[in-house]
Length: 532
Ligand code: ATP
Image 1 (cartoon, rainbow, N blue to C red):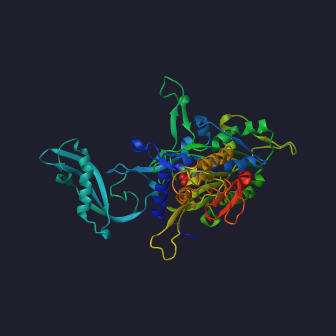
Image 2 (cartoon, helix red, strand yellow; image 1 turned 180 degrees about the vertical axis):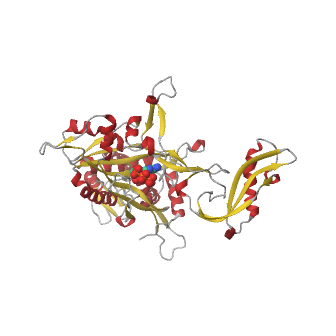
């Protein structure tokens, strides 16, 4: 089992670079320097993400009798998020670096020990500049730092108050230097030693104004971009129940955008400010909640295996008491061994009756379930498997990425191929159609015929440029599971053993690189069977 801290930054760099060069994922607004925490999916990324969402929907809605789908609005009524506790409590503690102004999550700062140098202010006699403000710097004597490092940082800090006066920071005189020894403090920025502000709670929701209210402070005009898709499900639970005549246990599934003003977006798409969730709220009788939580955990683990994330790379964290939400009797985090460490992919949480009870209280409307058989009325409990679509795409990209050494024995030149080993069901391009030569109209015409045959059923790619071997490698790099070559035997030339291969094609498998001959008339069912 991998160590939690094991990381492979080089692999991650290669994946990020491949994502950009092949058109999977680009930084949003890159042209203008980038919009932090936002990402755009390019042509291949859009296909991959869509295939993942389609597969999740198929498995959780289409192939189940007990789950219904919905698609709620992103703009969310302030009352919904007040009832759910997001308006009052969806926040992270954060502090600012007094020197660099960087904003840091207070609970993610590593404790440090060292000597703190304290100052009361600074001045510059010649210009008459003077400022009185307490400031401190932490230095680490074990890392060969001394009072000069502390003074340099302090002077940079006080130079911010020069207000355009042309005085170099190093000419400032520091006032009132004193020191203390600090052990395991989190009050200083680990990057530069500067003192941080006190931690403040920072609400992660994006707030907006709806309509043309003339009053800027009209609380009723406030709406939010939803921070999770779950709340739309809870507030529509009664409507779904009444309009669909379902019985407990049943679930409502939703895929959609969610927005969180993350203080420190990082690790490529892993922590973004705009992302997509794939969530199920599975409503049940109270006595079934814990059992269903275990069942959902298994179902979700199998899902990841089906899309190519093996079980041995997944870790199940049984979230301990005190770290779970107060209303949750059981929560599992499904984590994956990303190249930047073991991190959460999905949460499977037993949320009890908390959410529906809150919405019943705040709305003043009865949303109880009526059991026809027992004549009981009660608020159902809920189990929530909540997955991140972007995080799953990232896990699939990391897991699929492979560089295979194909150098032949004795060969002088190294031969490596980059392969994205996507499962066929989510691969962006299912098959590449490759006429052997582009200057033979009969080959091209036949290849186009095959392309038109397959196009209504799957995403295929036609490519006639470069040698066939190079074309195969190009497809390996973007994870196309099948390459279909149209050659002279397709047109009627005899095969190597004198056989008639008219209207058959060569199908090359991406992973094994093996080839087989298939009749064009069998091609569509052959492919569909392998793409499920
Ligand atoms: P984390 O602890 O990583 O912030 P969380 O526990 O707050 O995540 P949930 O609120 O349980 O996350 O959301 C469910 C899923 O939504 C997460 O497991 C993750 O896959 C996804 N998700 C949450 N926040 C982000 C984000 N900022 N960027 C991308 N995906 C996210």
